[in-house]
Image (cartoon, each protein chain N blue to C red):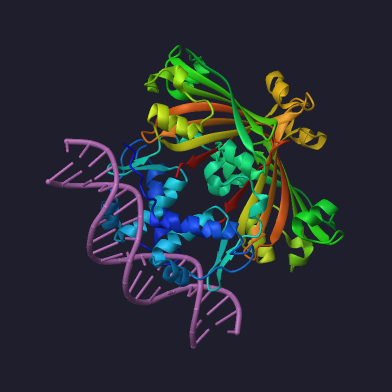
Length: 243
Length: 243
DNA sequence: AAGTGGTCTAGACCACGGC
DNA sequence: CCGTGGTCTAGACCACTTG
């Protein structure tokens, strides 16, 4: 296996192993090669192999038993989200076995309300960008996402923003900001008239409401988002490793 | 009879640093000592310090900036749950600033329905234990939790189970099983009559419904649980580090 | 007893940011 | 430039499970 320089060796090992799990070379429930064998086979140190295995274990792909071996988790296919991407609707839709697509509804500029200013550390009335998008699983609308970003972070004209991009890439490309961490508030709500127009179904039913705040490396909020999420159409199912 | 296993050095370092963050010795937003300084100060290798710092970073307590330093996250107080304990109601209630208590409602033995048998890998009609509990934040009921465990795993009389214990400890003490990983399904639902009796509030409102499956190291399900969760009384707010 | 994963060390070099 | 965190190595010993 050829090692390139761009990504870290540990991440490449991680990807190699994950691919072998996904391709069924390492079968669900079966024992994987030992750390020493992987170390020899891939030509890297055991510590590097362990870094990769630790990431796979944290995401629930493998189980490690001291004195025994490392086993492929049999239940990974029942999972649609992992710890690192609870907020990632595109991966969530793919994890449910559907084809994702994004329809930008509007990109507007307007002054912040009190609530928005508080969440973003702005003054009331400071200008912000409101990006409103609809996420589809195959042809079914499953999520309505509103994102609010301070206008002061943007260096380019508002019109140049491609509303189809991943929020991570929007930050990278147009705002030159990296996301350091995310705080998500998970709530339940009765479906509103607008969401009901998009999602359909019964009118009094309940849906999930995710409040997401994105923070940069400087500890300051980059953006705030509200996602309405039709949990009857899309399962939000995540795996957590114990310890 | 029980040997006290000393925790790993890395975990001890983790606890020391977390305590200093909680006690305000390392202030929110401020820069922590460098890895080398911590390594010297604590008398451990830099690799061990890094293991501890990695755990703190994964749980969102600190931010690490290459070429600069390690900073304490300013927003940890806004968070009620961390990635490792989304399912832990006791910690969740404490994270919201309330005092948790548990009221066992019933511990029964009965045959599994088709749905329960499927979730637990049993045959329909196999006996299981149904543990039903109510969780309080201060004096307010906030969660109704139903847990289903195969009777075959239990070596002791049903009556000996202490319904006030943490589910982790129940497994450890009465079933001699360790939890390896957990799959959680997060859904939204209109409050049912029974939950409404406990939680109060409007009758048509929505609450969160968490379906939790606990798995052991052997990759087989240990237990299945349904948690009804009053998200108007308790915030489910979690932090995720970005990679 | 042999082999596995778990922990820890000491040292090296790199990439990046601030001064 | 220097100090920071990021990566990787080689080796050692321990704790545990299995045959």
